[in-house]
Amino acid sequence: MEKTFYSIFKTFFKVGTLLLGGGYVILPLLTSELVDKKQWITSDELCEYYALGASLPGIIAANVAIFTGRKLLGTKGAIAATVGMVMPAFLAIVLLASILSEIIEKPSIQHIFWGVGIGVITLLFLAVKEMWTKAVTDKFSVIVYSVCLILALSKKVPLALIIIGALIFGILFQKYEDKRNGFNNSKTEEKV
Amino acid sequence: MKLYFQLFLQFFHVGVFSFGGGYATLPFLYDISEKFHWYSAKQLTDMLAISSITPGPVGVNVATFAGFATSGILGALVATCSIILPSYIIVTIVSKVLDKFKTNRCVKGAVRGIKPAGAALLSAVGIRLIFTSNLHLLGTMLLLALVVLNIVKKRDPLITLGISAVVGLVLGYFNWIGV
Image (tube, rainbow over all chains, first blue to last red; front, top):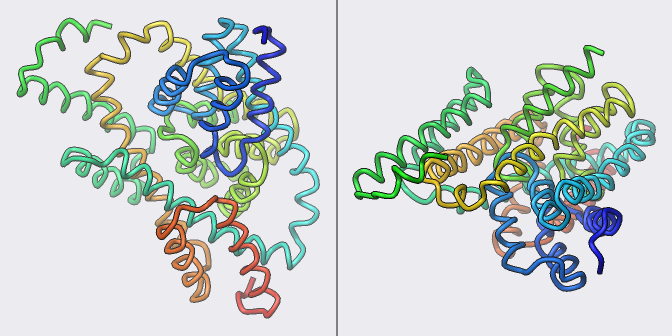
């Protein structure tokens, strides 16, 4: 299929619409649309964009859309993909928000939300578990995790500062480790 | 005008600092609810439930909702664009230096530091939520049951939410949860 602004927008609009339940399904969805049906990119490229998107700040779905869109049609493609991905979410909430305030006062809806609130906490802990298995793999990460958790719970330090602190600490530790292991390439590669 | 600027600033800040996707935006969104009262913590939790059954990434849903709750459709537009804009800028830069980015030792170190930090921030939200939502005994039992259910076998998030909705409805009907 031809890569036009409209076709990219339409494809990502479809993915954005089908993206239910908190983004866990984004990789299979994108594979089916971009790799299998449209054959715009290869599965390897998609996986790379996903991995990169997940290690950058922001919403992963948006990051992946921007990477892919840019690859397909430069800046125009990136904009088409981003708008397509985000628009269904935007429209759904705007439509819901206007009727939500009316129905939310009903007791039975309140009861449902009480239950669903607990479901959300469950999902949140599952997300923590998944982040933990990916991120906390050695002594260094255990230390970063513990210190950040204490700081976040204390509520004395702005969250952004915790992230920046962890970032700087990570860079310093990597340099220390590279030095210890005699990693020679670091000098030339760090000049970015 | 000042309000839109505040919205822009706050959601841009979420877009810059939330690492780890999906729920990683939550610590910042709860933080905003405490500082600005655009929406309450309870509303945010409700919103999370809703965003699991509506299309799109959770972060976008919540940004749209918060913007809408604050100042209607224009607010929704401002908040949504602001949370995406950092992604756009950062991805654009990274895709230009992609090969260097992948092998750079500083980037590797930064990611190594940020990932556990992101997990820690989200854990803090989870812990605080347990203490601030009035779970009572039945709620705690439901939470434990759902966690066990998901640990035994990974389930679709919608199943977890479906079960919790039905349990809430039934318990509420018998007036056992005091909501």
